[in-house]
Image (cartoon, one colour):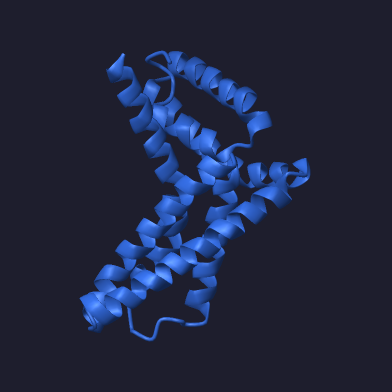
Length: 193
């Protein structure tokens, strides 16, 4: 990538979200347009444009995946991974409550750590098993957290920002962790050469 192309993290994020048939063309077009914008405006303005395109494209990526016919496979994989994540989260919660910290305060502190760790692992598994599945898994996580907040599943009184953190950071960790790992892997491969 040239010095005017978007940062590698954005590209890795798109690679983990996009379905395989569309990866090369969409990513190539976005990188090319970003490089042209960087030459005519500024690199920071071009990077902002690139990130805005990513955010605007997510609903269309979901729609494209649904129309492509591979949505059932991706949804099935996402549900399977989500089920495994649920089992891991329940087991970790039981261990925390019984062995580590039976108090409510300790649980409030440790619950986000367990949740984000679980969603990060799930995102990596989804990206590894089937390309484009991370987006479906992130949507399932977000919908589940929204429903749990709506039905007031947490019996411990917590502030609104605590619940908002789960609602936003859970799906983001599903999407961003595979991209971060891809960056780290590419950097380690470059340094090994």
